[in-house]
Image (tube, rainbow, N blue to C red):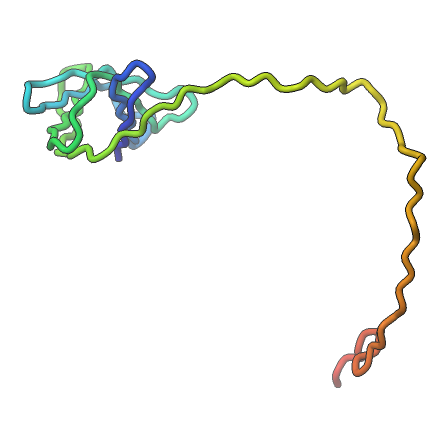
Length: 137
């Protein structure tokens, strides 16, 4: 399984889900209409099955030949053709300062407002009594 996006520098980022830790280190080769591009791949530290590869951005809609090749021995591990129909664009994060709160301050009660009690009249419980029904025999 693979997903595609662009990083903040405009490079294509290919995320690949692998079978597990025993899957060998690899690189990605993409063959396209203008030649081929090599993508360096790295395992994601905290997620053993996730690998990301980064390289040249590809044109949308073009059918691309993806080849996963082991670094040790250049053995073919997987291949397939994909047409990238869309890329997720990274959005810059905007730092917004938030007001500071003094967590050491003790809460104060507003003693100027006194709650007004509200009286309600009980409604009849007919046909059901206000207590639980006895179990059926």
